[in-house]
Amino acid sequence: MGRGATLSGERIVDEQKLIEAAREAAKASYSPYSNFAVGAALLFADGTIVTGTNIENASYGLALCAETVAVAKAMEAGRRGGLEAVAVTGPAAAPITPCGRCRQVLNELAGLGATDPLVLCVGEHETHRVTLSKLLPLAFGPASLD
Image 1 (tube, rainbow, N blue to C red):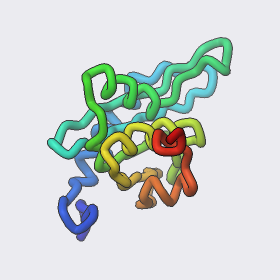
Image 2: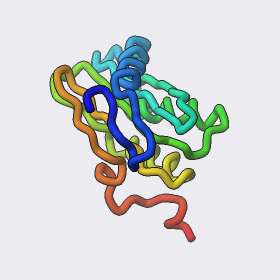
Image 3: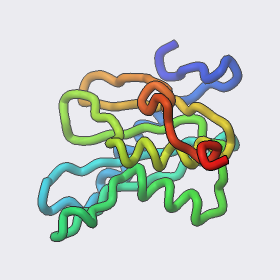
């Protein structure tokens, strides 16, 4: 299938476009401590792509990951659910995956629309394709509070 991947047999995702959006976002990274610029791109059901980049802080624990920034921007814009795919890029040769915190943040947004988005973990020469539920099995979400 090349540049696309079928999601739930319903929609084709232009993976290359999503990856390029994440790479473009990484260019705005503020990562003076690690020099590890990360970009994230979120694709919604209406075709909108929202991006984010990592923002480091001298107090390391206050750093923001690219995925968290993208989710915050999406929610600030009123998005609640509809998340279909995520691309995460960085400077590493091997594909990088969202950290545990970001997996949980992505799960919260995806859970609002009952979706299981495709996550593209992008490296220099290869991309891993996995659903969020595979990255975060037995996830804690809004339904867990009922």
